[in-house]
Length: 202
Image 1: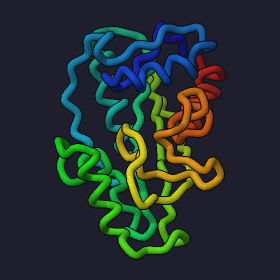
Image 2 (image 1 turned 180 degrees about the vertical axis):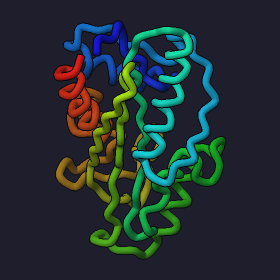
Image 3 (image 1 turned 90 degrees about the horizontal axis):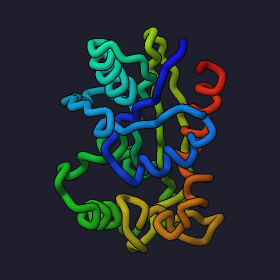
């Protein structure tokens, strides 16, 4: 099924930069929702990362079909799972403590909830699932994780990265160089797997 472009369900400029970097050798235009002029109110009411990614991708694919456009739609859902907290915040990572709550407040709350918990029980992971919906309705999904643990303080900025410590690197996720982060991050790895599917199917 030939498509003339890929549309990624995000308006996040930083995320689009990472996506374009990884998808550069696909030889197909990659646009954000904003660039494609798509205004979609999407209700992410799934109970898993897989369900939410699929909901987003299918909602936009439906709008594109109505416009008669042949595009592959990609959407991701990602979050932080902390084992000691029964995998919270999980699929609610973006909405944890309220969507408008600063991450400094969210991070401080999570560190506080782990007060007194030893290193070996502070295990956590970032999860990313990417869904692809093709013009003919086929759906593909990839899932990737990066394992680490929750630190005792914030280091750096950007979401939950400042509290996500990577023992094998001796630093927090927020301290990684962008190229290194793309290589080892949950989203970077899920995008690489999705790229293999796109190379085979496009």
